[in-house]
Length: 361
Image (cartoon, rainbow, N blue to C red; front, side, top):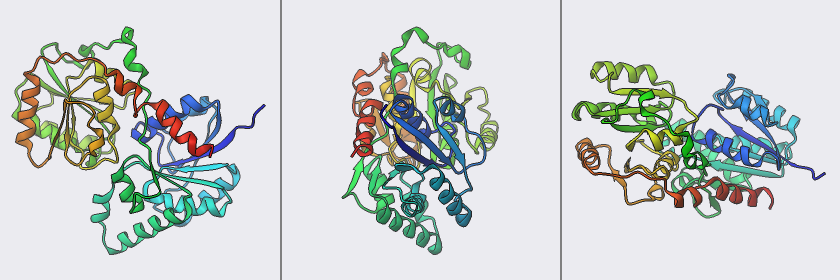
C-alpha cells in the first residue's frame, strides 16, 4: 500500500468563510490521496470541524498568534508531534512565523499561501505595527520554499514581489449548480416572485462592507430586498443600522450556509460586492458561475471579472451603484449557469492540479 504524504494545514478558523470553504472542497476531493492534519489558532470547534474529522483528518487547537510566545511554543510542539512532510500555511502575515517554526522542526516543504490583500490594514498600522509585519514578511520570504497567492495584489501585499510567487486562485466545486432537481424556493427566505433580490455573501466584518448595502436600500423602492449570507462579529451592529433605517422588512440575514451556490442560482437576482479589499473575491466568481450579474467595488482584483455582466464601481459613488442596480433590474435577464466558469480556471479540479504540482514536486 502506497504511503500517503502527511500534509499539515495551518489556519485561523474552521467556520464558513472563503479560505475554509475552498479548503473543505479541496480535502473532499483529495483526502484519499493525502493524510491531512490541521492546526487552528482558535479554541472553539468550527462549523467544518466534524466534517473534516469524519473524513479522517486530525485537528489541533493552539494559542492565538496575538500571544506570540505561546503561539510559537504551541506551533513547535504540534508540528513536532505531527512530523508532516509538508506544512501548508494560510494565516496571512503570520505565515512568516509558521514557515520559520516548521523549518526549525525539520519540515522539508514549507508552503505559504496568501489569500487576501491586506495593504489597507498595513497602512493603518503605526510604526511598530509596520515593523512587525515587515519582519514577518521577511521570515516568509526566507523560510517558505514555496510562495503562493490567489492574485497579484495578494502576492504584493504578503511578499512585496511577484517574481518567484505562484499565482494560484482558490478553486470551487461547482457541482451544486448542476443539480437542478434540488431547486430552492425563494419564499423560504420570505421573498415574493415580484421582489428583486440583491445578495451579498461574506463574513459580517468591516472589510466586507455590508453597511454600504444596507444604506442603499432607503434609496430604492420597496420591491428591492437584500439577502446577506454569512455570519460574523458585526451582526448586532448591522441589525441596529437596519432598525435605524426602518428596512427590517427588506433585509434578510441567512447566516452561514452550505447552500450558497443554490441560493445564488435560485433565489437572487443581482450580486453586490462592496468589499474594501479582497485577495481575489471567490464569492463574485461563484455568483457569475450561477448566472448572476455582479456590481463590485473597484478595489476587487480585475481577474474576478469573467462576464460582460460584471460592473466595477467605486464605493465612494453610491448614486452610481443605485443607477446601475435600477438599470439591471429593468432588464429582462434570463439567468443560466455559466458552464465555462464551472469547468474553467476557478474550478476545484484545476486548483487541485496546481497545488498537487507543488505537493509532488
